[in-house]
Length: 290
Image 1 (cartoon, rainbow, N blue to C red):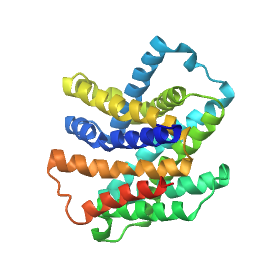
Image 2 (cartoon, rainbow, N blue to C red):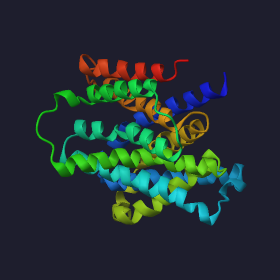
Image 3 (cartoon, rainbow, N blue to C red):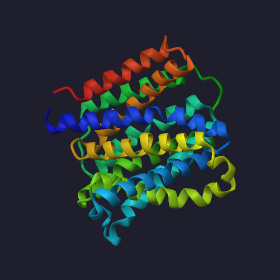
Image 4 (cartoon, rainbow, N blue to C red):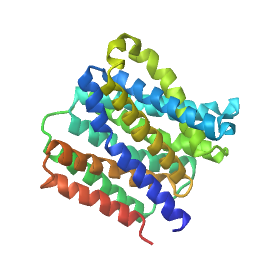
């Protein structure tokens, strides 16, 4: 297996792990946690777990230059916290389907940012894969069948989620070029995200909920399985493929989320949703075709 293939597999596996986040989000929200509290739990658990791992296995990875901290503010605050806030707000202002479609405008923003900042070319194959991906996301989210007008605020907040989601790839690329490992980038992403999300969430008011065993299961699932592992894998994958290609491959996430919904909650995958899943995986195949 060559380096590029390994990088692609890392990104696709990361997206698959992100795709099961809904299981643990439903668990925590069912216990009574607010959306921002779930974001805070996710960030804090991830920072603690990865920090403990680095403390035992590789302490030099904690070292960063103060002048480079803007990269981690970017990945942690402007990306992780900002896109979650925009995403949840868009759900309230529009619908889950519309919010999901607007979130997965992220590859378009990554491609544009990468062309401007890293001079990555936008060729016909990328354009075709991007169109297929966006159409697939529309079908998976049910976007073609969602009626009703979308308010301007809901539309622009939803686009903000896509921009925030895209910014992780951009700021991570800068950090990688400065010589930081994927583990270092991921740890400081979670640390800065937790520092921003905890005051906003007022998590300390939910003390009785935190001591429940189910809360510990949800925190480990959403913070380690669906945060530490995928962010490490995705950041590692960025070192081997172009940022724009990585963003498109990561959109297998909604397809995995749909499969999880079918397996655990009995949601149908027939019709448009099944076609959307096939389109997303076909886009990945087009993008990686020699």
